[in-house]
Amino acid sequence: MNKLVISAASAVTDADLATAKMGSRFGRMDLLSQLALLSVESLGIEFQTMDCSRIGVCMSVCAGSLATDIQYWKGQREVCGPSPTLFAYTLPSSAIGEIAIRYRLTGPNLCFVGSDAVLIPEARDLIERNEADGCICVACNVITAAASELIGIPPKAQARAAFLMRGANGFALAENHRDMESVCALACAGEFARNSAR
Image 1 (cartoon, rainbow, N blue to C red):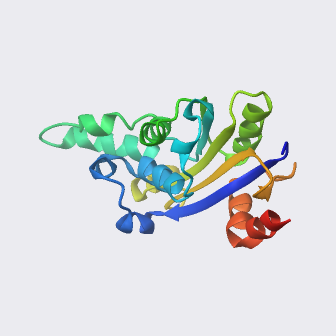
Image 2 (cartoon, one colour):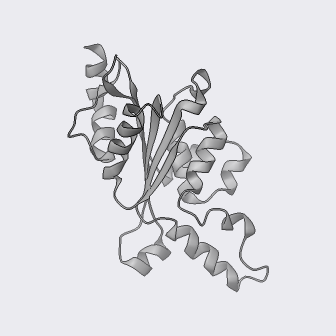
């Protein structure tokens, strides 16, 4: 029971937002927060059955909150000025707050700007140091057309999530499992089911 496993994994894109049923608050969020929250919802974990003070969140955002920052800045040209609602999302860590609010999580949280290669090692460290019993890892890559024009990276809007915990059932985490794309792909493609059956 001491091994660390991925008990659930998910991947979502902006195309999945059209069918998301997440309440009225969801529609007011920026794209980054919507994708992050939907990726966690897609895990299907019943967090209310756990000690929510012992669930951590580690998130990486490829371009920080740049897409939202640009949208907010463009609001200065509007008659009413920039949106005060949008202002709350001009921090890369805002999506962690939305996740914590929805699932009432009060455990440790970390936000990284850049590569998602730090997520799984950081989550593993939180659990091994007994600061958390489980950790949600979320990797968001949101580059809007406006952000793409500014930084020269092709537009993209996707998020991946995985839930790391100690346990017997799940995708067994090896030392070389570091990036969220490959871990989520393996977990979602059936490796998760094969490892759970062992």
